[in-house]
Length: 550
Ligand code: NOJ
Ligand code: CA
Image (tube, rainbow, N blue to C red; front, side, top):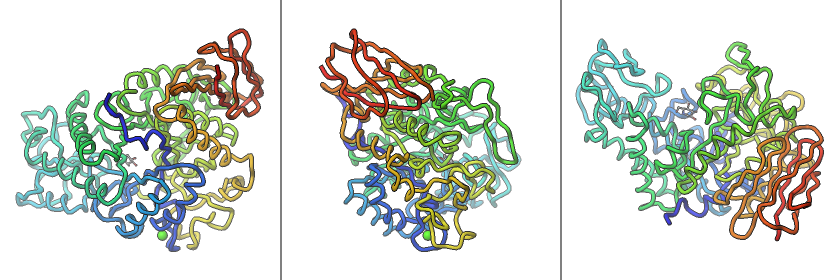
């Protein structure tokens, strides 16, 4: 049987670090790489063993670093290439893998390739980007910009106007527009080689893999993503041949395509942010913890949206619906379990934070779910203490509404929450000074805090292979509570999660004749076996894990 991933990935729990906001080591107000190195022991203490670092390369920072001007150079504000190498080395000593962010689809307009491509005379970079032949010509329905270069023509952009799309070709070029090059055109194959070489560059220096930005977008006019999938499969072949221990993580948000395309993991992007795709693309109301029910609506206030009438499954009100989620999830899971892993993130730098409308105990239930599901979980920095969105901030570096979830990590209760020694007005973004804003030091000192619960769940996941990425999953009940089995070899565990704040009781069939439910983490839930069934009961907002013993 083919190996679906390097062994380390099966045990991996990732921690996403937005470098500007994690820890500022030199007092300039912006987080940096030495700051991350200084906090590696914290990651060990928490219990994660891999990091996804958002782009830390030279950039115009019009899109938080996703507008790269040099793929092989660390942005000066974060440090030097040597600092990144030191981060790889120090992380390795602690058995932590560092994965970088590969923005494969576009660069900044300040990248040397683009500057050359924008020259009026033909040169070897002319076709590195997608240009039509005259500023007056039709764009063929593509999002193109003109008026920014001496070259006569418009160039295609992927996201913001300063993010020109790299040219990986068109799966179905329109003959009316001969500038739409086919995917096997020698010029666009060169761009593919550049992508591979940029990956090789950092893998050779010690990176453990990449999260690949907008992975499905590389080849244009590619219905069904057939050509884009073939491109990524070629990259996976390179990984298997040259870097078998390194991983490819997709920002694709559709596992049935991403995992068949050779990615080891794909994100289940799970956010109610208006305009952003989700696993349930047109049905954000079905999301488990950011979702909203049918009667919900968005209230717009300036640039911010507030969700009103919020009922997702993990609401203490207990009015949500897990069944719909599992219908899609299990379909994707069954279709892809031989290919790779679905990654459920607690959040990321594009979503609203998970903590809106949630108490610490509600959040603990969400973590209990994410950390006991198959696949490779991702924790967004600060979610382990329930950091909150700070709505109403002026957009920072292209963040717009996303800015609210990118504020500095709250390490302690001091002036800048331990993030930086810079004067408050020099911080990358303001720290959360509202009453009740969580901080790590307070939570570490309080044994029943969210942080301790997350740490406990991580410890359990690390010691029980059945709970890890490739352990089996069987859903028993998708109601209040949620009950499912995880198993590997001879070991089977039952997980019960009750987010609703009410008294409850349930019975579910035993998967095999068993003598005992042996608690791994019982919380306040009563568990037992009677008449061939497992019986659980308790007060609200609880979770537990038991081993089913013969
Ligand atoms: C997805 C990234 O997560 C987001 O932050 C970025 O703005 C876009 N891709 C464009 O690169
Ligand atoms: Ca700094």
